[in-house]
Structures are given as C-alpha cells and as structure tokens.
Length: 396
Ligand SMILES: *Cc1c(COP(=O)(O)O)cnc(C)c1O
Image (cartoon, rainbow, N blue to C red):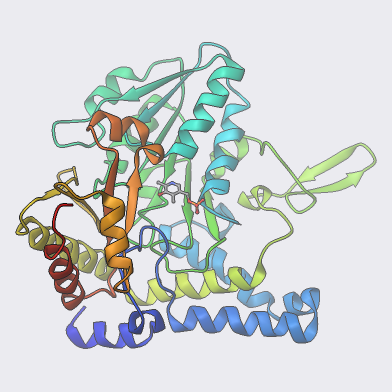
C-alpha cells in the first residue's frame, strides 16, 4: 500500500479525522462503504418495515456468507453468520463437548482467551473432562512438538487461539492443523484477532471450526461474527442449541436440520449490522489480505522500534513473528494512567489485564499492559504522535 492508497483509505474512514485509533484489536474504525450499508439498511427498516426491508435487501444479506467464504477459502455453505466471535466459538465448542465422556481431554494453548477457558472449565466440571495446556517454545508460540507428544486417544479436542488478545503473538495454526489431522482430533481455531489482519486459508490450516468477529480487524459493525465449519465436522457434531431457522419442524414429532453451517445460525439478527458485515468483508477483499497483513506487520514493527527508544518502556510482545498488536508497560506508570493520558488527547489505546488471558499473564508476571493495536489505515505520523506523548509522561 503506497502513500496515496493510505491517504484515500484514511479519507474513507471518518473516524481518522477525529481520533488516533490504536484500539483495532478492540473494535476498528468503520470505512464509509460499511457505514453507508448500515445506514441504508436501517433507513429501509424505518421506512418499509423490518420484514419488508429484509425482502428488499435479500441479496445484500446473502453477501456476508459469500464474502466470508472467499476470505477464508471455503464454500458459502460452510459459513454461519452469527452475533459475535464468542457465539461462533460456543456453537462449535458445545457441539463437540456434547460428545465428551469422563476421562476425555481438551488440549489448548497458554494464551487462551478467558471466555474459551471458562467454557473448558465448565465442561471439565460437568463432564469430568481434563484440560491440558500445551507449553510454549522459547520464543512464545505453542510448542507443536510438545503438542504432538501430548495428543493421544483421550484427546477429543484441540482448541487454540490463533492470535491472543494481549500481544503480537501468532500461534502456528498450520502446524497445529497437521497434528490434529494426523491424530484425527477435532480442531477449533479462535481466529478472532487474525481474520482481517492475516491471510487465513482454512484448507491450509485444516481446522474443523474457525470463529471470528466483525468488529475487530474486519472493521464491521459490533454485534457481528461468523463461524466456519468443515462439512465433515458438521456431519459429526450436532448443534447444542437449535431454533426454527437451523432446523425445520416437519412433523408432529420430527425436525429436519438444515444442511451446511446454517444450522448454527438463528433466525433473528441485527440485519443492518449484517449488511455492514458484508460491506466490510468486501472492503477487505478489495484491498487484498496480503497487502493488508504486510502493511499491518510493517507498521507494528516500526511502532515497537519507536517505543523501544523511549526510556522506561518495556515491550511485552512474544513470538518469532509478531502481528499488529503492540503491548508495553512504562516503568513506574500504571497502564491505566497511560491510557487516560492518551484518551485525554484523542488517542485510543487499551489496557490488557490478567482476567482476559490468565495463564499467560500470570506466567509472565504481568497484571496490566497497554495494548496499542495498529491497522493498515494508521500511519507513521500517528505513531510519532503517540510516542511523543508517551515520552512526556513521568513516573508518579
Ligand atoms: C475479542 C476476542 C474474542 C471475543 O470476540 P467477541 O466478538 O466479543 O465475541 C474471542 N477470542 C479472542 C482471542 C478475542 O480477542
């Protein structure tokens, strides 16, 4: 992406004129085509009525499924459009969990997201299932050699977060997929922080399920997400919950499931947001994921370098390859104070805390760290501005 391209992308992002946004791992700024899709849909609902607006916009409402399929390299039938990444993940996890028996085991990674781990703990307690956390390598990724040694006939699921919420780490999703495939163990990838940031190909990764959100790197409205489900996994794992969209009531005592991943969807949704998700996916596709990921990684590398030059800054990103999530602390200054300082100057960052990725944070002796996540529409002026502000903060 050259300077001119970035300039036009920024011009298409109204939020860029208002804030320096380094909270893209929380919720990225929407681009104008996304905003317009949401507003046009909302107007139709206001003027025509909700069901009538849906009928008029039926093509636009199919777009998310097709565009998501293109983005992650699968068939549209393998995609379920849902409310958020957590729901997407839960649909997959609880479908698999229903099949678990006492003594079965779940394999996961050290930086697993809290919502996922809470679900593991729940099923561990109700189904007498064990949880095994695969150790990291020296550089911080999940150690695939250890994973290979830990998988056995009791392993009923490998569930891993691709990019953890609290740092630049990228877990080796493809290598994990090779091990899962060879061992014939279901593989659920939480790709909430990687879809829209990195190139994702479910055929290369060989995952059975992949979950993600709209609001983060895809720049879609909040309250949107999707699930990829491999056809063989759809056959094997029944949804844990159903409504009359995912299944049809075909006789007094019978129902028929929809074929494909649609069985994981529900009838009711925020359709304006769904139209926005379609536009956001199209926007990412038109820019190209290879261009996007190259730009994000470059910006983040430059950001880390600039931060490292500031006295008292400690960077906390682990992993050999680092993505767009930049994390650090400043000696003697609480992370919350830094965020407040930046916020008062229209600069958005976030604080990652123990509670989101407990095992990883406690293991590294961290409680609260600043998360400054860069997207392709950020620029070097913004990074300079952030670092200049940071350099003025003196330990209390
Ligand atoms: C944000 C996040 C989620 C949850 O996404 P929602 O859209 O809020 O459901 C799940 N996993 C990871 C790694 C995340 O960072």
